[in-house]
Length: 98
Image 1 (cartoon, rainbow, N blue to C red):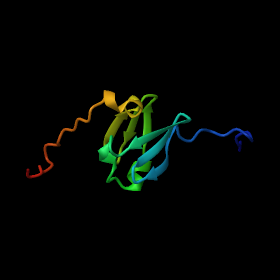
Image 2: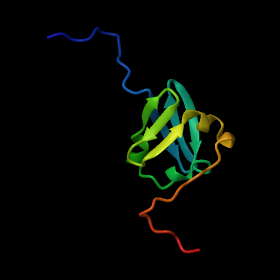
Image 3: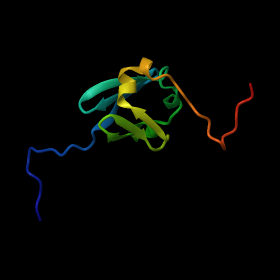
Image 4: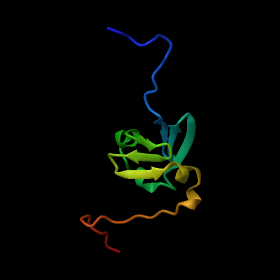
């Protein structure tokens, strides 16, 4: 049986949720912290904590929350003005009365 060398830690995740507040949450992506405000990214506001924590770095510039089915470019967090909110309603979800 072999064990790993002492003092060398294998990186567990390239992305993690570092903190959550009523205004948004902080992501640690590749050792850089970014704030994700609910005002700019409203689909996260009513998510359960477990759903927020389950985030994957699909590529160096792409995040994915499988429980929420949300894809997000890392650049959209850094420059939200360049990425206006666009949402398409799913065909089988009921529409809200106006």
